Length: 373
Image 1: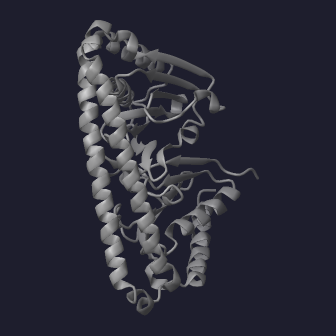
Image 2 (image 1 turned 90 degrees about the vertical axis):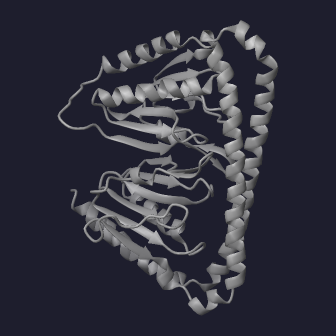
């Protein structure tokens, strides 16, 4: 039996609007089972889910890893698409509670396996550390909010210079090319899923595009300095595909979560991606991609208008990079402080009991899998 495939996404992100969650799109509300993991920092939630994921991968099941934007080595959830089972970290900042208790959702509380008197010895330290983490994230989000203001100023200069008639021509060309080869059915509402492909993390800007695009054969790549215009192109195409009855996976901008960086149309094995500043991605590194068609929006920019704003544009780039750099520094500092807080919990945990609970959950997941055979 061959090992299952791994796909990695971000269900939530550190954005200019604060922490932003697309957790509702991890799995459908009528799933086979949604297991919500509760417990404090350091109790083993991520390890618990990772172990279940690895066991299912070894048995040939594909698994989605929903990665944590605030900790590169941690996950916020896993999802096994073929059996419609998910496990989610239900603690702050992505608080999740059962929507359909018992019939779909249930809580697994790892706090059942801690030594309360032992933890209470560190009460003051935990409260202080938790407050410090919150404050550091507040500062990080203020820096990202500043970065967005700078980016908006930058995009205003490009808006003055760009020919949107020609940009709309690109949208029409890409959409027409995709739809002309699609088998469109309007029998039911197409599914539209929203997540992040990139994130601001303690280790810098991160992405897992190689796993998200692993089944894509044709990629339309939209590049250019006018990044907001690139998002407009990709977002408009995503809307058009939905209107034409095609299921879509829509991946949003890490800084501005309502903007779109990427849309994948699974049934067409096709994707449309804009260049994301700060992300190093090469389509040739994805083995499945057979054809890449590129559209550089810079060709639609009026150089004479850009020349008028040359000084302002250069200044914006410098200020933008500085604000993002500061935000990343504070996110890294928050992660470091969170690691300190975990150290107060770890000695108080009964990990043997947690491992026994983990084994029990695996057997239940395997039972759900049997029902799909």
